Length: 236
Image (cartoon, rainbow, N blue to C red; front, side, top):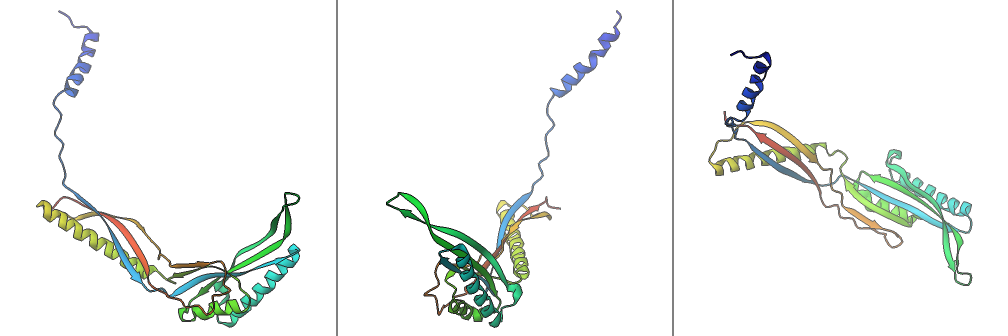
């Protein structure tokens, strides 16, 4: 009996089909441990940023802007005299808006005047003088207070310490898990930093500073965090 070439060509797919439907090869399970942890550091702030400004109203936009500009110039001059460096003074909000009122007789909105706003962000690097700086701003006409935030001029060292604590906590947890499971802990294969947070600033806010002087200020502490995930391989 002769076998045709076409018949021989059909043998290979049949063999492959039998191979694919045969018993599956058992997979080798590699024991590993993966742990995520967080490290925290609390530090005292060494600087503060505050937003102070002036709000002026007038019948014309030019007059409102001139009043706000004059008060802002006086405030900047006083800040400079108080020892605040030019690099620590920055205009952060400048606006001119119409002030509307409702005319009940005509049942329509009408312009009642104009409001100019100029807000300056001031960085205070000597926290012992923070209350004084706030007082001086109010003295020269600042009537708006948009917030006070404490921070660190260089958070690098504190952030690195938070990272060290996060890794140490991950190692501690991994050793605990391994001991509880009755298995040895393998070497570290990979460390992934999931993120670190800048200091969480404490914030004080208020729209009006008319009654703010003198201002007692509590600095408190800032918290810096770092998060890591550590992968441990099989025991050697």
